[in-house]
Image (tube, rainbow, N blue to C red; front, side, top):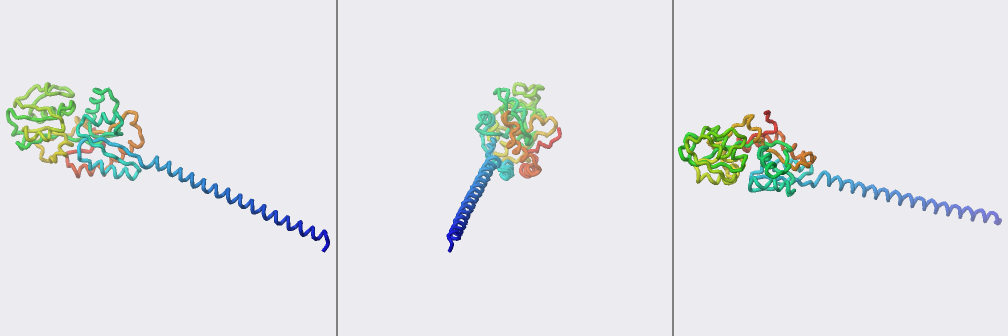
Length: 299
C-alpha cells in the first residue's frame, strides 16, 4: 500500500474518532444542561407550591367567644376549612376578657358583643377595636322558676339583671317596656335612673354570667341569650322577650377586630363565611326566635 494511502486512511480514522468524541461530549453537556433545568424547574415548582400553601393554607384565625354553645361557629369553621383557613374558637367566661385579649393580640377576632357594648368599652379603655361585620341580634328575655307570667310579679319581688353598663341599661329598658318600671330617658340608664317602681321591685345587678344561676334566689331574671343557652333555658318558656325593632340596631352583635386589621382579607373571608343563608337557616333551626340573623335586617 502506498504511503499516502496509509496516511489518508489514518487521518480519516483519527478525524472520525475526534468527531465522535466531540459529538459525545456535546451530547453529554446537552443532557446535563437539560437535566439541570428539569431539576431546577421541579425545585422552583416545589418552592412555588410551598409558598402558595403558606398563603392559601394553614392560616389559623383565633376567634374569641363567650359561652359554650358554638355550633354555628363550628359550622362556619367547616366552610372556612375548604378555603385553607382553620378557625380556632377561644372560649372566655365573661364579657370583660375578649376585647382585652384582642388588643393584646392573644386572639385575632371576637364575636360576643353588640355595637353599644363595644363603643362603651373602647371609650373606657381608650382602645380602637372596630366592627367588621354583623352577626345576629340576641334578644334579652325574662325568665323565672317561680312565676309563669309577668302578671304574677308581685310587690317586693326581686329581679336580677346583668350589671355591665350596656346590658344593665338595656335590661332596665326591657323592664320598662314590660310595664314594670319607668326609667329616665337616657341611652344607658342604671338602677339609679329608675323614676317609677310601683311594685317596689328589688333590682339586683349581677355579673351577666350569674343571672341564670340566680334564678333559684330571685323571682325573675333578665338573661342574655348566650347565658340562657349555656343554662339550657328554653327561650319559648321566657315570660317576656325583647322585641326586635328599629330600636334594636345598637344591640346587633358583631365580629370585631383591631382597627389595623379591619381590611384583612382572611378576616373578611370569616365574615363572608358567616353571613350566608346556610348560617341563617342554622340559627333558625337551633334557636327559633332566641336569636335573629342581623346582617340582612333592614333598619
